[in-house]
Image (tube, rainbow, N blue to C red; front, side):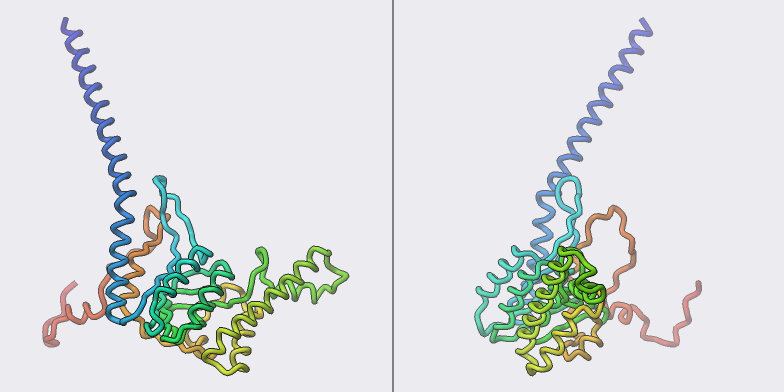
Length: 304
């Protein structure tokens, strides 16, 4: 009799524990679903709020073209993005909806992407009558640089970089393909490589001509051709960092007067794909340290 009661208690205990685990599982699953459904919308609302504030302060149309590695789907799969045809369609629509006399500010953070898409955006921006300003808080490489060249003013963070606009054919730099064939001679390469070199040479010429046309809005023809040649001929690796000083030496209209709201917007585009951040620090707004420092210099130094 006693053993039966004890066994009944154990059965009741395990039944209750199993029920609690099931309830906990469904609560966690519900929480994940709610986060996936409503989390992105809250983040989008915060981004829109910052963009609206930026537009009000500068009396401009603000277009954010920001490519991050973001976590998507219920399994947290990181997806990297770059300039695409869909991006160009959206940017061109935003430009069309902007009055001709209203300035446009482009917040640009991208590794580059589809050449045609970048060229479409650059062409639309360079044809604007009102001022176009491109803000580069971190980097705008390849096609991103091409878009930046269309601006009347490029504002970069002190440590931000641009990059060369030399084309890549397949997974190889066009300039390297052409130089390889020149070094080995026509008899030393295959027919397929000859065709590839021909395509590479055409790609270099096309990008150089387009870049020069974009630059002619702000530079004499000879200077525009010179800058375009430097950026497109393949003298550097495709990921070569063109820092602020180098960009200014090339003749580009670059300054470092970056508004703080641009950094606030970038904070709303967190880098995804990591369960544990690899960089940690205590964020302090500029000027906060000075405000926290005692005004009386005669105060004794704090003891360790």
